[in-house]
Length: 252
Image 1 (cartoon, helix red, strand yellow):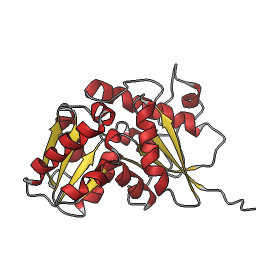
Image 2: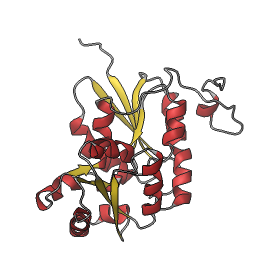
Image 3: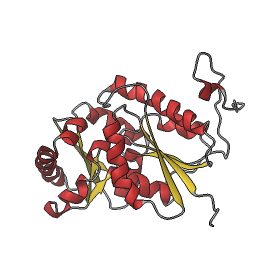
Image 4: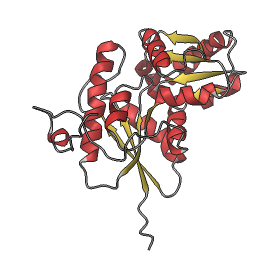
């Protein structure tokens, strides 16, 4: 009997919609190789769909909460964490406290897209445009991003109506291609799997943000963890037991 401990990765859906978690699982599980285990967690509080600054801020807390809860389980150590939202709430905080690599759907997509050259983003929800522009700049990909094309329906609405999503996203990809880019990111957890369905109708390579997240993490292209030990730099008061039980490190 093979007793080898599998490499364990954690996918966190930072909104509270279990259908989004299931969609991510359905797209990513077939890509999990032998000897690798992908666990999933859904935020236990927050918004069913992250669509504004406030819901994004709460989702960052929910990501930390889900990570701490998983960290407290008697499971094999984590080899990587993927934030299942194209907006990466909590990315910098999780990267600071985790002893393994952490990335999000957006950062991973930027990593893959930048290898092609200048890129565009297509996503759902108009409020996402300035939020994504800020994230792109903070991660150092501002010079490569040429255009952000948002469609009026949110990612949740697109997920709920696949035929409408294909029409809307197909037109958005045509618009984005006019920006003189080398590839287009189709961003959003709810849009996982759509890039493959739309690729035959688009002359440019389409990057599926969920698939990019998993590939970048698995292929060790995400930024390395700064330490091999999990832990916070601040003591907590009134937080869940999973938070309180993690070690506190000395800030330097």
